[in-house]
Length: 391
Image (tube, rainbow, N blue to C red; front, top):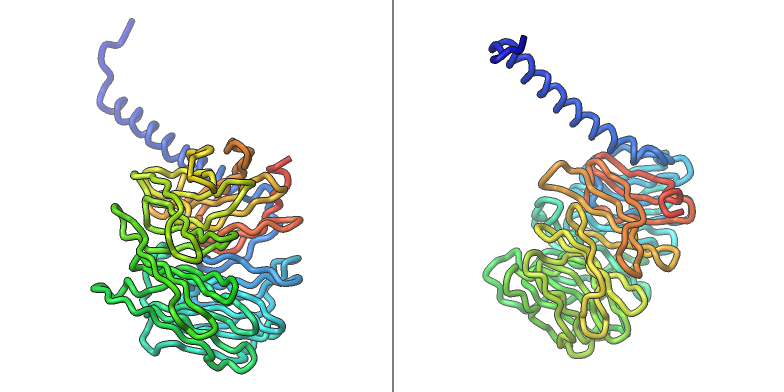
């Protein structure tokens, strides 16, 4: 005999079973994410969130974290060699020069002995405490080295050149802009140097070319950005006569590095394009962010789109090309479940080769070595054997 109506207790039991099943599926999903990244895990180094990119020198990985600690890690074992405590969270990539490893913490540049971790010198460009924001808007500018001088930018619109040996400032330039918002002076982009000229962009949507010989401004160019604020946030990349960079901008517009004039513009109205550009044959590849969540391959000659790949997450990173044909790029979901994706794409047509789900993903860029891939996350540094994913 058929039962026409279920009792209230029966309905409650069914509802509870559905809720339990839903929770089980969530747990299973999270477990799957962990299993995927741990399947070929060589080692993991525990720390607080890492938003910068690992730097490898010999058998040592150098990395800073949001716990204001800078670490030297043995790449073979994943064990800590030494650590150095700073005053502020570290989002700057490190650079190695001789016996020194250098990085920014706030508006201070530190030079440590790379073997012992002892401080050799430090240079603070301003005594004003730095503005600590979210990972997507905290100053990520990293130092660059040229002819025995390390250059670093700060949030006051200053470029400082410090002698590697003495720690003395030997170069100085301050942008002469008149912004209403103090935050617009911040230089979040990592500069590029070519032919004794330093190129960089600020949060006020201007790009600059400055002579390293006499600190004179050669040109400045307002970046056209009708929808967003135009902040330049990626590394600046010089290729031949052209400057490439990403920012809070729905237009991607490479500039002539001698004049500052744009060559062409690619437009994606639904998003902005903040990733550091990389190059494959005659194309430049850039990643986007919210709403669009695409990776674009554009012709370097006129900006015509070659292909795009619809992804999960947003791309505030520097991709890497391996094996001359595979794009390695990582995303994060800071406003969602925090699970990002490490993609392996065919550079020729944008098809997916494989992917790895990364729990607690951050804006740390992947670094591929011969036998493993390094990437920072919200709970430390992972070293993954990625080779199985691209066979």
